[in-house]
Image (tube, rainbow, N blue to C red; front, side, top):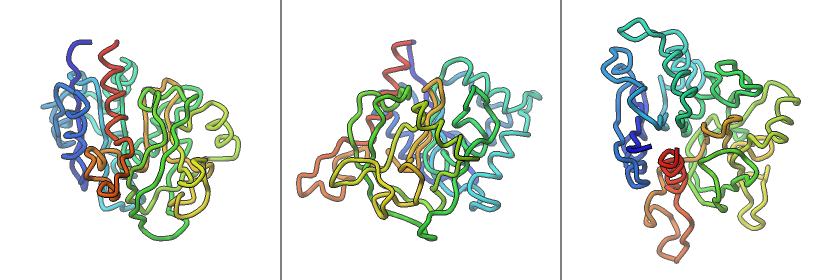
Length: 269
């Protein structure tokens, strides 16, 4: 592939779009356009013109009806000005082998819409959700993430334990049943887990696991490995000085590396 064009969706409460686009540029993307959802509806912007689609963090519609639920309905039922359903455009984007990243509110959107985890290749069928943190409060802290080396996820390939911030109130993964949770684990669709900073192992313990997500799940991929959703904010750690311990020499790998892997994968197609 020649150029890597990145599309960052904003609007209706999104608030991390600018730093997300900046991180994509730092990672080597040729373009990183911030586009309001309404521009897709008017067909002024087309998904076909991009290779990397990012749903950034925020508070879509004020989290009314549940985080990202209303946004999921827009994607599921709206058509653009040409009469093409937005869901069909998104499905084609995925079928074309392009990459999708959902961060925090974006992850909530991907699971509510059924893009993740897509067990058995079933897209747009809700199989998991994200509910309120066990602490019953908004969590704003730094956590450690453990990438799964056996996951097909292209974003996490070769990455080691990393530190990134979380800031959410609804981040606990809720599978539709125990069988679903077991499949996420056995099929290695758990791309990232919250890790104990002392042992580096996945944890259920608060505050290292900020929301009580089972198996320490912080991020999921789909069977293709080309979609990643995660609750932590990798775009919020795109420079060494973002880290709270940088003056003490705590030099963790930046969240930018997830974006670097994405751009590298697209260039190698």
